[in-house]
Image (cartoon, rainbow, N blue to C red):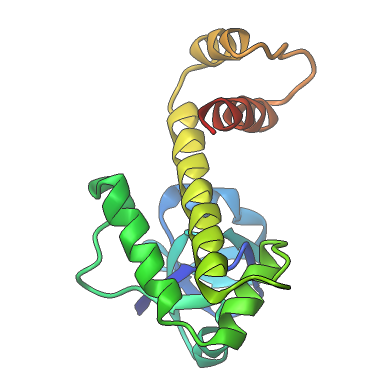
Length: 184
């Protein structure tokens, strides 16, 4: 199986064989069927991935690559956790600069970016900022998911969120959104 990274805001898959981490599979268990191959699953329903998420897939993905929805992850690319922020941004910029205009515009539209009256350079820079911001948001969510319930409630209070009727996942997203806004 080859490894891929999602480069659009959101990607939906509905068939095929996929390799996921336990955490990824748990979030998508409604659309997966476990195989006897460890962390490999058959996709039996629609499952989604956000920009920057990685997975391994067995099957024909050429149409997804040509449409600019995913990119093959090269063997020499390190996990984003192991790279410095400027290295991550450089990799994003390099990938965007290599895209054809039509693929760049499709990607920008998937992020809700208006492409009119923007130079290619401005469009690339705005896309890179959005993609990098999404990666930072995902890291914040990942860090919050590692907290215990009491720590999570404390963090909610620190950023001014009343947990109230929010379920665990919604609370994490609300806190992550507040933290992201504060960092901007």
